[in-house]
Length: 314
Image 1 (cartoon, rainbow, N blue to C red):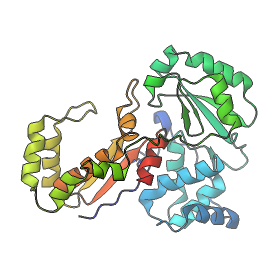
Image 2 (image 1 turned 180 degrees about the vertical axis):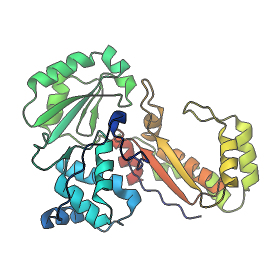
Image 3 (image 1 turned 120 degrees about the vertical axis):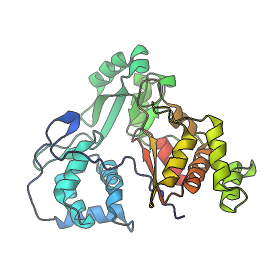
Image 4 (image 1 turned 90 degrees about the vertical axis):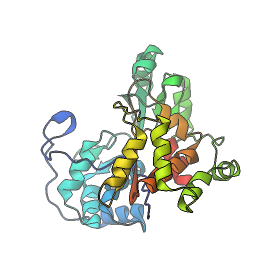
């Protein structure tokens, strides 16, 4: 079994090419144009030696967005050329997601820094609207203040995200301090259980037993089926039965791990990953072994920058 784990922040959507955000028609694509040498050089620098695979398109769009604060039309053209994709395909993917700021030729780029104030139920009850008004009143031309849907930190409302730095129980003063100190990257709690600590406590023992033949697939599937574990995505489908069904399908079999919780009050995935990431990784790899998975894809929402940093680091 070979397992690839690209930490993409979203999967490429398969949608009607004529439909856009909210079901409306897609905006007109940028006119055909030649690749600008400078834009191509900038894109190549951001991509480095990483493979130009189509499944990494989302990640590469994020690199451009994170570096420049927006995605210029010239960079879309350059990225399409570098990845040997149709420019319309890159454009449609970039305009599908709200966290990508696509700037067409002749348009003004947004301010370099965006502050998102969560306006989900928990945050609104904790004063998010007042916080949003006060921040909008004092923001300079170099900062954009936006209302945002749930960012997955309902236990610490109200929340403001400065760049990618989530501020729990946010106040105007805390946001101003973060901006002044350029604290715009994810603040990762160093107390999480890292690899060495996890291994010392017996972590990955079960996975090793599976790979080494101490445990067989059928016994693991029966254990899962008898555990009563169910998915928490709404349908409540028994996990063990799902593993068995997937294993019975023709190869190659893929595993998508969906970490895109966004419903009000739902933050279990983020809370868990920021504290015990290797338990998640071991469980994921055991599932891949049991179902004979060829590749794993982790679907991680952009708001979970701290989780992404931990998973990439570990």
